[in-house]
Length: 282
Image (tube, rainbow, N blue to C red; front, side, top):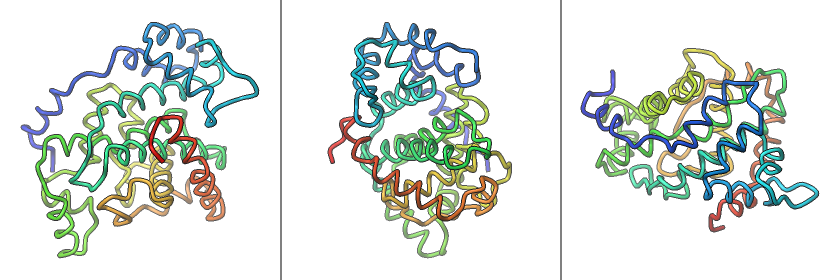
């Protein structure tokens, strides 16, 4: 069932992405963009530039020496990490508590950040899987639909959980029954409005589909990384583990159970550094 027109109109009235992010998004599809160009885009946004310098020197990304220039910070982090940071900073700013999902502001944002981090680890574990550079961005924003749902729908979490329990269905299926659409569909609509690459939109739209209707490494990566984030206890909320996944995603990526455990363990170990870098209370 398509998203109703009145809800689509609300999405269309969302504020646009900041101009710095709008300028950086095309870099996801441009292998020739230089780090110098990225530095030029962000150097006039003082808040973003100072945050990038701080995070480049944090335990999460720190190298052998302290960085003092924006150009050096961009060199250390790389284009996609920079865009993750810039976009993540914006999402952190606009994220609100999500009582409909029993998630706090930090819970909602951190789940996306941890999913993104897990995708980077997944790409290292499965170098032949063809996971595209835009995949960590897809992981970061895969649940953006939840943020929009809580803005425009006044629903008690008990209502959704009751439907799950009465019918023995997943949380996403309960969303579909109660509203006629789910947060993945809403998120894909927002991604299109914000001009994200088509593959990012595809991953957002299909990360809860089982089976996945359109096989693509970016969908498989987001599906598995979302599971990693939940496995280490980030973003559980009311949904908890009440969702299903297409196990063919793991097979297509060539991911063994042992490798999944390594990724989960590495993600858990990096959690404190991630929280410290972004100023989230432990």
